[in-house]
Image 1: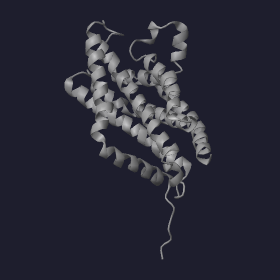
Image 2 (image 1 turned 90 degrees about the vertical axis):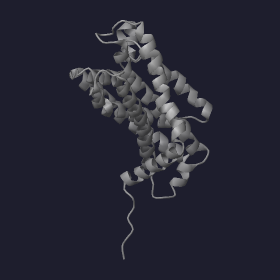
Image 3 (image 1 turned 180 degrees about the vertical axis):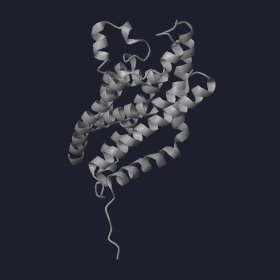
Image 4 (image 1 turned 45 degrees about the vertical axis):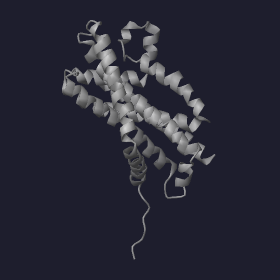
Length: 259
């Protein structure tokens, strides 16, 4: 008689991911409007519209300067909000996570699966926007495809950050604090819409602490074929932040489940 074996960590995480994907398939058309069409509207308004009035930035057109930032910024928003509002419902209202603990799943399995899903949904957005932008000729170089692993790394960080705040807030209204107080400033002041050099020195120093700054810088460098030491620093910084945040998030999420 065969003995039953417990699922591995990866199998459990994949189960969480698969559940989210099946749910996504039911509402994919609605999701496309948010994760693909909305960034394309921004690309048209700023990349083409504003870009027609802006001279070259760092020796390149404003459109090519802005597009890598658009991908990083969009994936940040998708990953963060996917792992806050939707997962807070599972945590506090439907009690889905608590129910899952009656199975062989552990808190870290749930956490890992949700982070992977949040990052995956963000990548669906990035790939969708990138394919359409390449087809329209909005991107001068296909080298930016090589930056997708960097964008995925950044997406994992912001998905994890979303899970951290999900484990801390007490109601939906409190999500506005990290959203408006952290995510919006990161979106605006991380070298996304204008070069960091345009800001005062003090703000530049603060901006270099932003994970989005390093994601944008690395993606932009890869698009322009600038494989320098700074690119390595950008990626290393993202990895260090991800590792450090993982321990904090795991403890906070498990504590919230137990409480």
